[in-house]
Amino acid sequence: MTRKKDEPTGSMLPLPLQFLAAWLAVWLGRVLQQEVDYLTAENRLLREKLGG
Image 1 (cartoon, rainbow, N blue to C red):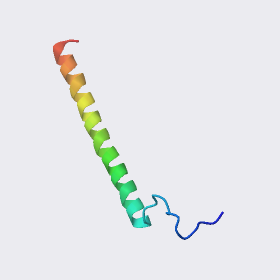
Image 2 (image 1 turned 135 degrees about the vertical axis):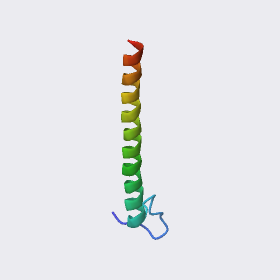
Image 3 (image 1 turned 60 degrees about the vertical axis):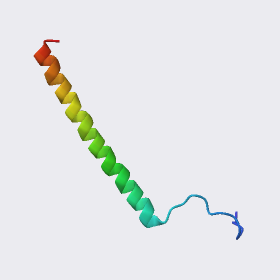
Image 4 (image 1 turned 90 degrees about the horizontal axis):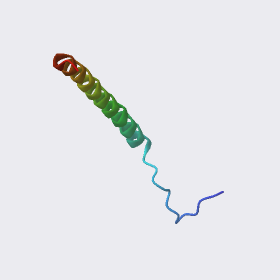
């Protein structure tokens, strides 16, 4: 299967941008997971203080 000259190549980003997008997604995922962990621990402590 060959591609004609006038056909678009699709949405492929250049390799450096693919790397940057993947790195950003991983970093953001870690930051958000840290926030979830913090809020979970905080909720647990507050529930213990309320006695529930």
